Image 1: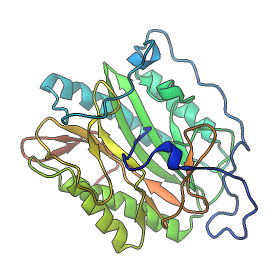
Image 2: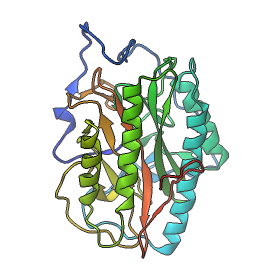
Image 3: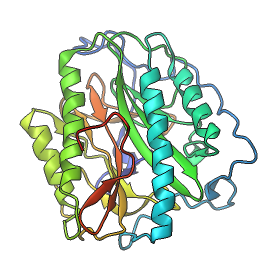
Image 4: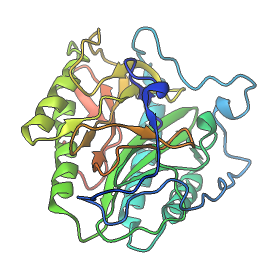
Length: 319
């Protein structure tokens, strides 16, 4: 959730969205329009549920973005396993709830109520000012979409990015959902993105270069004619949502190798084509106009002999 922006890109380099008449729309009959639908205020979290420190600190720390990759203790790993499984189950519930005609705010309500039923906190609320319990990125929104009152229409696809805080640590995962009838090209993009994630996970082990993840994702995307969004990265995770290492999803020279106890997210965004990125005035929603995108995400633990997918869902068989 709220991925770190890759060093070579800064918010100032992302264009601001300018509404304009479009000469043609290849993939979407109804483009996503900034400000067209309202955003309901964040839902309340019961007072007995512990909050992350950024909710109450006068000078909140949202993440650590420099330094050596974090190596977690066994006690911390156990906490991360539990948080990851709450996040995974939440994402599964949300994905299976998607229906034509519901709004992404309806989905936010489902996610919110499930998270608090687990005595967990929806990490997005208050993270750098984010106003909702989950990120929902529909169609050409490639990242950080804010749930609103727009009804989902036939042919829509969306990423549901779930992050929760439980027992002092965060769990983070995301899934794709589709509303029939889908454009087969977009379905292929979604499937290829999941394949890229799975293939990148499979090479994780002690001694493996972090940079190899980007190589694998680029190769899988390129083989199918898609492009990798170079703007956002995966990240280490623990007491803070963002920690070292930085996981870059395209070809890169990020230093260092994996060691047992590393826990990080892999969360590639693939697009139909390389094009411009535009940010809405909410300072969260990033779009690539008329350009479908897809994203999947898992939390990975490096073990003595390989890897463990901490956010694996009950319906997954490919990893």
